Structure formats: C-alpha cells, structure tokens
Image 1 (spheres, one colour):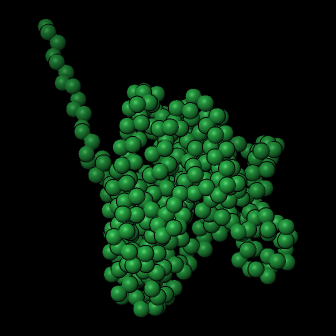
Image 2 (tube, rainbow, N blue to C red; image 1 turned 180 degrees about the vertical axis):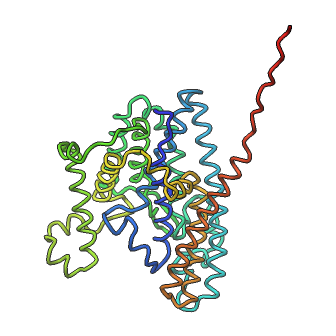
Length: 381
C-alpha cells in the first residue's frame, strides 16, 4: 500500500455521486449523459468498487499497524454507524415522499417509490426495515454497503496476505450466484435489488486494487498502450459496449445492426445479480481509466477538486442526494416537468451536495488542534 493519496479516487467517487443523483430523478435530461448511457455498467458499479477500494485502503493500514482485531472492531463500528444512518435516512425519505405525494397530482409517488408495502403493512414494514428487508427505491445501495462492510473482517486477512486467493474465492461465489440464483430475501417475499452475494466481487476487486495501487504511476503513451494486448482488449470492450448501449435506444436500429445471438447473450442486462456483461464492462473501463488517466496536475483543477471534495465525504453527500432526488421530482412535477425546472433542480441538487461537502470539510479543518511552536529558550551566558 502507498501512503500517497490518489486524488483520482475522490474525483471518481464524487462523479459517481452526481450521476447517481441525476439517475434518481425521473425524466431528468441530464441523466442522458451519465455512465449508464455509454455501456452496460453505471455509477452503482463505480460506487461499490471504490467503496471496497477506500475500505481496504483505510482498514488494511490499521490491520498492519494495530492488528486484525483492532481493524475488525473499527470496521464493525463503522458498519453500525451506517446501519443507524440507514434507519434515520429511511424515516426522513418516507416523510418527504408522503408530503410530496399530497402536492403532486399527476402521479402516485408512493407507488413509484415502492412504499405501498409500508402503507398496507406498517408494523411488519418497520420490522423488515430493522432487518434490512424493506428498502424503498433509492435506498438499495446503503444496505448493500452495510452488508459488504460487515463481511470485510472475514476477507481482509486473505486480501492482505493472499489477494489472488481472495479474488478467486470471490469470483467462485459470483459464479455460483449466476448458476444457482442465490440471493437474500427481502420484504413481501421479494429479493434484494442489489444482491450482495454477487456485488461482493466488485467490492473485493476494489480492495485488491487498493493494495496494489500506485498513486504516482507515470503516464503511458497511446502508442505503448497499443502494444499491450490487455489494454487493447479492454479498450475494445469499452468501445463496443458504448456502441451497443447507444444503438439500444432505438429498437429498430438495434434489430437491424446487432445480431440476434448477441442480443440474446447480452440482454437483458441483469443489475440485481450483476450480469457478466456489466462486470466485464466495468473492469475494462476501470483498467482503461487507470492506464489513460494517471494522477497529475489535472487533479488540482478547481472543478476536479470540488467534485473530489464530494467524493471525500461520500456517505454524507450520498444521503443528501437520496433526500434531494424526490424533492427535485416534486418540484419538476409542480412545474409540469418543464425543461428549465428539470435542469434547475438537477443543478441545484448538485450545488447543495457540494455545499454540504464544503461545510463538512470546513468543520473538519476547524476541529483540528493547532500545534503551537515550541518556545526557544535563551542560551546561558
């Protein structure tokens, strides 16, 4: 592991948070420019991968310095904090949806947010909420992160000592999920939308990447990368996936250009169990990004630093984005979904997310104790 901070990670996390927020607003025109429109994976893969990266980078250092027991205790304590945040956030979100639904007459926001189960069975829904079985729309990523983080103490020693074995074990579990269809039960005889048994592979891959990362990787020329078969194959996957995703917007064009066998192989792109096409696309995209975009002066640009600041406080900013998405949807509905309001609500939400990150960063800097300079004693004559 390296002690140098890779500011690209903060930037990518912040960008993923913006994309997630825009994707969560129905009919948002800016959602046409998010990652999901240019490949099989989307910002959710980025979020989970970098969550594993950040978790292993932080707790791996603690494990090497203070031992695995101390690291495990801190991991479980963090998972408990996330659990409490999830319960509180769900209560706030339901309150906002119920209020918004009273003001929006064009559609049923309770139905859209999957809150009908709570309205029909409030007592059982409360129990399912405490058991992480009840997850309305927008709330799925946080329970997934809680489960993955809670399982990290089991995987962390193997990741540090035998990362290849850890990846092989993770891929084996992923393969069994695709074969047997394993998942975790959810409310009303349903299943988890983000299956932790499948999505754990991205979390583990992110952790393995953190253990072998180098923040100061020198830039490689396009010509030299063109001579590397792995990069060429990854770039091919990214380009072909982007073309297929763009063509898929027009079914008639897709039917004319894409062979039927390829359509049957790639579609539907299952998000619940992290379809192989999603996994391969994201790994190829991450590899190309790591090779083509090394850390350099660009991370000091004003806009990059602001996006990176949101990524540094990803939990708080994500929670705010979950709350702001239905509020933006309500504002758009009250304005008859006008383009001006849709753009304004999407950009205002990002502004508020950045304002929260700025406030948290300022609060953190003000809380740091100042180190007084040691007085210089006069020399004796």
